[in-house]
Length: 161
Image 1: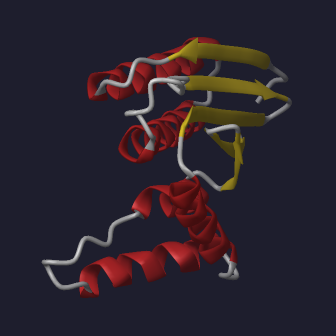
Image 2: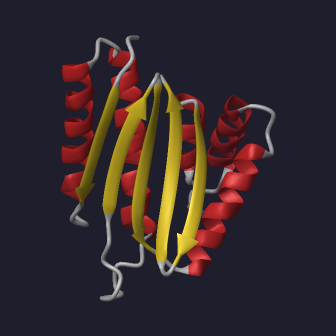
């Protein structure tokens, strides 16, 4: 891949239809700029998973915190996807435990397989999923970090392209 630099930074409305619109837009931007179709699919998948998590777990009922932002930037064979949304400490604690759990495995693939097994073995009445972050780590070969400041959750996925 040739050297590149790009930046997409947009505010987002909290509607499910916007996830697909943004995923398609991000992938089309990559397809227009680069030959690396696999890389554009990876960035689109990471974008979609992070946006879905933000909508599912964000604290959208708080009028003070309506910030929902997507940033995708890259340079020199790496990309960074950042999603910011309002959140609560309790949901951020779950997020932190999930990221710690993923990092407890030797490889992201082992974490992914363990999560698939957990989902397969769970009784139908128990909602387990939480596959998005481990999918990003494994399929996207990403490192994922999260922070929480002043009511805003910021999840960052770094991708090698």
